Image (cartoon, rainbow, N blue to C red; front, side, top):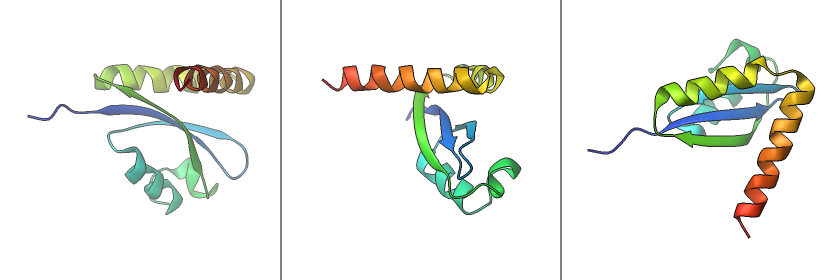
Length: 93
């Protein structure tokens, strides 16, 4: 039996705002957001691009990451994304 995969993701919207969410299929979810079928928030802010994805083994952990991100101020969200990008760049070396 294949294990479920759970993802926390961040979108950057057309207006420069960020949207954090949860999904089990990031590529499908991105298509849903860009077609206006995913969330009321992104419906008027398309196109959106997925700028961050993190996989978790447990759904609850992914939902906790989403909640924590949504509690951050704009500047702290930018810092989180910057640090995540730096960690990703280091792990690719």
